[in-house]
Amino acid sequence: MRPRLRIPRTRRTVHHVVRLQQGDWRWGAGLRAALAIGTPMGLFTLAGHQDLGLLAGLGGFTALYGTDRPLAQQLRLLPVVAMGLVACAAIGAAVAPSLWWTAAALVVVTAVAATWSWGTRLGPPGALLFVLVAAITAHARRELDWWMVPALVAGGAVLSLVWVALSARLPGRWATGRQHLPHRALDLQLDDTVRKHAGRVTAGVALACLASLWFDAFRLHWVVVTAMAILQGAHDRSFALVRVVQRVLGTLLGLALFEGVLQLHPHGAALVGLVMVLQFAVEVVIFRNYMLGLLFITPLALTLATFGQELDPTSTMSGRLHDTLLGAAVALVVLGFLDMVRKVKTSSTS
Image (spheres, one colour):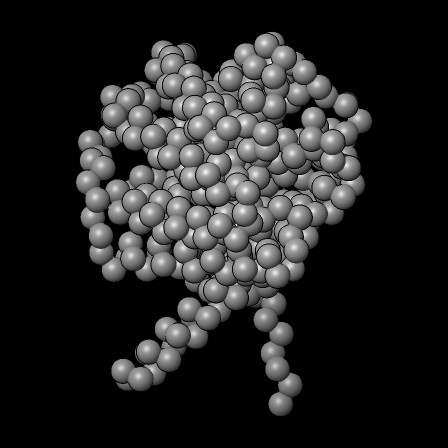
């Protein structure tokens, strides 16, 4: 008997890949993120130390959290987020000399950050940016004393809080923090759901680190972040497949966009402006369609990895695609294994 073609399922997958989710375009969150990340970069660029500005800009990730909360709640939440990002930067800088120690640290950071973010219902982008900060600082420390890295991130975080406070005063769609939602405390509540989510993501990061070292990834954190982003947002294989396709297609489209960026040869203030524009675009679109978000995340990551780093753009682009595919494969392996375990448990109890 010939197997049936699964055209309806394929068609449904394609539909979910390209469709726009319900909701608003996040203009205010985009502007806030661009200013929070671009301000420290711009100040250090004016001082002639743009490489330090790139590290300080990591503190601007603070402004990406809590955009759906009233301002009063944000001003209680975001200092805690900032301290977490600074702690992750300190850990990343401390383990920078060793890839194996870096991998071990990322697994620990993932376990703690995932448990805390799910246990407190922190909301997007969840544990992802804590792990990303630890990974980037481990990669980018170079000649700096280790304590300088968390200090730079702390400075960027403080500047971001200024933009958070000002963002509520902006007019119309550019404002954030005006919502009148019930108070959401940060009390840690551990249950089976939290443990399951944190365990899934931690296992994925551990496997991604091993795969990165085994297959000689271009950037360890690109593999880790790809696997983590898919596992953090997908709870089953069907949804994971959608996220994988969106991640890969978005990366391919982003590589094409980066080809255009290369023709601009940005440096100095132009590089800062480019980073701000790309970060703005990411925050505006990513909650409407993940693939659209990757269209801008990819050139943003490649811009930061290439310009001023004396790296060949072509090899960097090839490395980005390789690491994306490797991270996506890791996510599918983890979800497939967990799905198999779940089926075995179900059959044994029935």
